[in-house]
Length: 176
Image 1 (tube, rainbow, N blue to C red):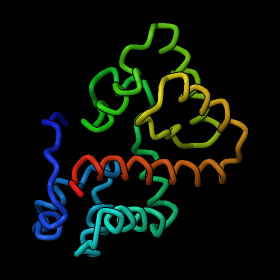
Image 2: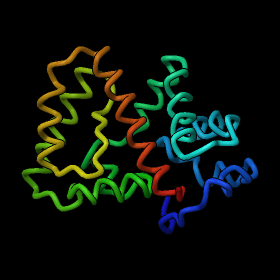
Image 3: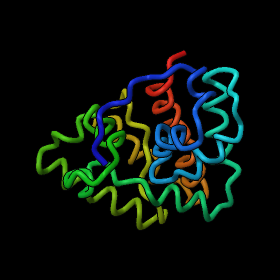
């Protein structure tokens, strides 16, 4: 999905959005999971940006486990083949580029590919890391630190990383 960067809107505009416009603006805040925005839509009006973030986070955390697993599974591998092929959301492409993942050397790309595979094999979900403000070295360190966890621990960490990603994306779309 290729689109221009979002022009931030005010919280008053968010609260006044009709459902279709709200979903168009916020439907991809949770990667390929418009149901999160649909759930948050029902929590309006939002008193402030924090309340909006909380509504999105609550929608994810309250979802049944299989739905949360589906949400996690929809995330692309960091520096994976989907990113290289341009098959990720505009948000993901921008975030991964900001962390330098679009300029990896061939050896670095192979390392990320190998680590993504090991992680997915061990935990059954992609490695999810909120990359805003991080470098490729931070992400690689994250792989190392998290590989010793249990599947249940990693599931919880991945959910919280998704919540963090959603916060960044909402902050991009809404002016305080």
